[in-house]
Length: 253
Image 1 (cartoon, rainbow, N blue to C red):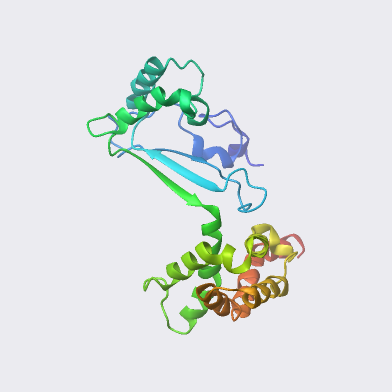
Image 2: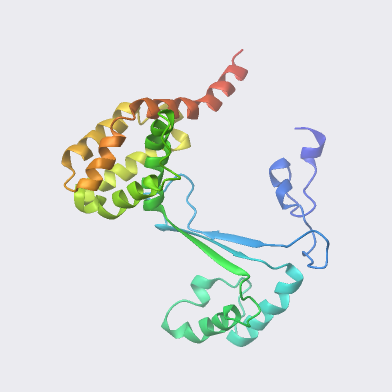
């Protein structure tokens, strides 16, 4: 380890370059000429695990355009109005449920027109199941269509296919088979599949089974397109293996 990497990070006290992104020891200040400060947090992140063992089916990313010096009195106002004393103000513990509706009213007032957070806060919510079927289209069908000079993204065709597969898939295939399609897609596309524990054949055999069993036209059409993308699936897996192969070549000259 080189000397800079040995030194503790000034913001966190932690060592190493991986913590350089957390290197601000002082509160952010809106008066600084650095542009707009944005605070961001997520909930429901499980890495590659998008189906089956995940804590939540949904991933939420919340942002507030605010600096620390502005946020401090607002947080104190929330604490005073809601009588919260916990060190960390967590929405899931302090604001959910029927008995906490008065506390939610405090937040609603701040977010409403005229409130201190009006048009400064946003939440982006992702249904992980929809994300998976969207990636089925993006990684394989869209790739094949692009090779043939067709643009299914900007013509909205990709989104339509993903929505049909997401909305009608459980009824078209049955919950069990649809669930296996999602879980196998996740396992195949995961970064840890560089050892091919789920092969191209494994993935496409399941796609073939789903296409055979489908009982709804739009789902059948999407799966029919997907079953012709074995070449694209192999290319995806090969590209995913490339960083590992490069590391192996460096460690074994």
